Length: 383
Figure (tube, rainbow, N blue to C red):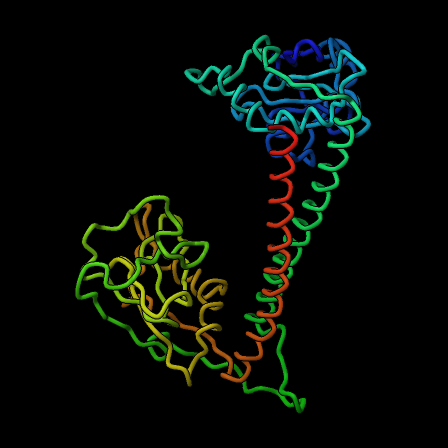
């Protein structure tokens, strides 16, 4: 069967109404595509009655994006009386034999998304799907009892995903706040005997690091690495195809435990990475390589300082000149002024941050597992 046999399908108002601080909720494509209704806009009761009451959103309906990010559904599982913009389509059930919560999950399935893609007008900008074509989406309707049990199961999985996602955000926010307090010295640690660590000292980066200039002697001498904002990866794992030069002779060698980074940025963001994945790797000559002097600075602490501290961010702003791209050659980086605690306090700080990182990683693994479970369930249910 097709969607129009089980749902009435409506579009919203074509006129952008005047918004007010309180009143009848008014939804647009951004609310649904981002699944975020925290910034809901409102219209007056008078405007709703005169211009928007041809059809209103109610609990149990589905909103679906039909312009831009086409085909994103949102099941309205809360009590509401609201209106919406033409960029959305409203699906209302025609029959008692349909669980609309289940249908919202079904619309997200690959089979239905392919159908939506086929019906979408791609030559338009932004791309869109006509209201009549939404009704042509092909539907396989199982018994309602099966719909309801599948919906309950998927909803419970989503609730777990939401909890883990919020926990991840809370842990990351906590770590960021903690690092700000540590780097500003608002928070100081003590030795095990309760005594204070020495005061932090000023240092220039070139005093605590050593530049490494080892070049590969022949092609594919070591695995190619990608230093990204997400970390350091084997290029073969990071990209679906080879992006390095066919001949990587003369590339920079990155031994285990050494730093590398891309020396140019379009947005003043640089990401420093340490090679912890192989004994020797290769990066292009756009990526400088250096190591720390161990008795002067901890590699892990310096990594935190460079990636999350304020000194480097201020230094980038100071060096930025005309044009959109900023270059941070190693000879420039070496002139960076830092305030460093003693090695002993650095190790204490790393111990604290590593404990938080382990919690974040454990939570991420749980989140990945539950997302994988959801994907498998959907494949079984909507094959």
